[in-house]
Amino acid sequence: MKVFFEKLLWRSRYMTLLAVWSCIIGMALLFISSALDMGKLLVEFVQVNFMGHEIENFHTIVVSHVITAVDDFLLAIVLLIFALGVYELHISKIHFARDDEASGGLLQITSLDDLKDRLGKVILMILIVAFFKNVLHVTFDDPLNILYMGGGIFLVSLSLYFGHKAGENH
Image (cartoon, rainbow, N blue to C red):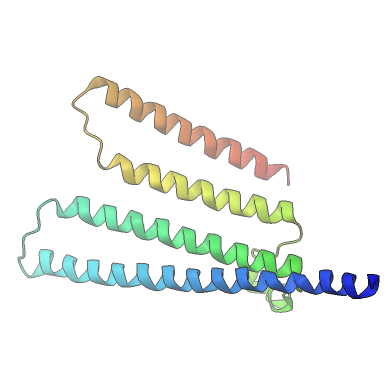
């Protein structure tokens, strides 16, 4: 009975494949969706700049769309890192990643702490991108808004500094 139970427990790790495949599907959907949005934005850009169409606040719209795309691409990268990390930690090492010199070991996950660190850095970048996306909508008609903006920029800089310092210790 003990041997059967231990085999069952050990083989239950394959349930993590549901998370791996779900993340891969989500990653693909985010990459495709963002790329299609960028394609639509390109068409609008050509229409405005070369065909004489008028769109109010077009520059702000372009910047907002590009920042949203970067945000989506970063989230897709989080899903990819998570999927590869869960697979390597629970199922098997990915030998193609280890044999490929071009990868430089970027997506090789060796421990849960390694996965956490890599995800944390990308999530920090997502938060920074989201901050700058919201900056587009700030009006500077009140001195307090300028102070808040400066404080926000300071906090973003501080988080990048500490993130970089934490990375040096590894």
